[in-house]
Image 1 (cartoon, rainbow, N blue to C red):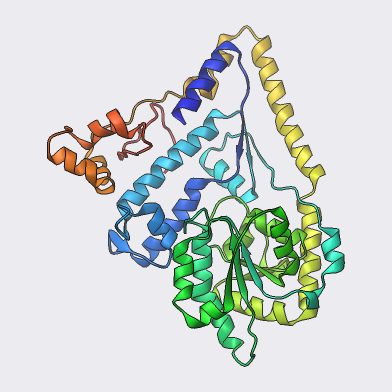
Image 2 (cartoon, rainbow, N blue to C red; image 1 turned 30 degrees about the vertical axis):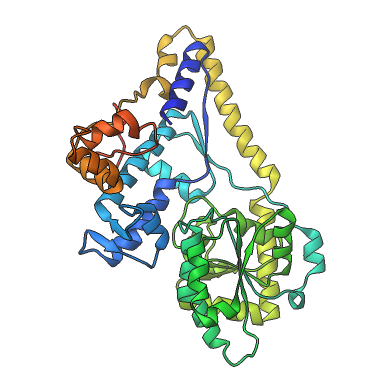
Length: 414
């Protein structure tokens, strides 16, 4: 981020421009929601071992050899991410978000932001709609990118196969052929496969499908009877849910997922499950009732036509670009140097990480035991000294609980 900022600043000094920030999602908000699930369950402990969200352990574990999450470190990490992300928003002349929920979140923190909501465009797959009916489809589909890790999509699947799918199988136990679950994506984590392999019932009814190309994805959408989006945390809106809508696959989703699309349970756009039992009920009714399945499908297609059309998105981008054209024209035609100097790229001053600090020394040592050993042997005066000389260029993080961390004029809201 620092290098990109410096390059933009140099360019702006030579030739002033305006900046549009296409904010796909508020990533710090994703982490805030994740850690809230952990602290809600373990409010009396600072260090927890929490297996309900293994992606949280992956994201915030103190070391690669530990399953412990240090809540203090996680909250400090998120606080830093929030400052960086909100500062990016402050530097931009115009911001675009993917969902109305995140537009409102930005405006609550930074009310003077010029911001537009611009979601995804999606065309309905007419050929699939016409050729694949209820009876030609079977099974439950989860599709998403994993990249070998459990964070976000891995946690969603983990929640589903631990909390929801067993309820589905129990209710389906009178049938000799229960509804099968396909977990598809790129880089499906080994830990997920290993967990399923340990359970005879799960192993018999769950199929893992490593995605190879776009045609592979289309075939999965065209054959599934139900698509699931059981996420308990996230950012932006889920592209794969929009895609499922466009292929006419009824989506069973969590309340969190539905809210990102501003869908209410009463809308009957997909089926919204407030909890594990609710999601189980959605799957049972939508997969067994052809009339309900067709009704959900029709509502989803109408939703896509209304909210994901190309014309509406072009209008939003036209507004954003026009706003920026007017601003830069005003800056360049004016003799008032102050207008040029008021830009966020000029007023934001990035400083070095502030340290050493007690919490930075503690967390850096826990996360990097080799550095801890070197400090004890006197090779480095402190963990901060290692960070300045090597760690920064290696992508390591040294975090202090300071308001001026990385920025000299941070004025953001906690």
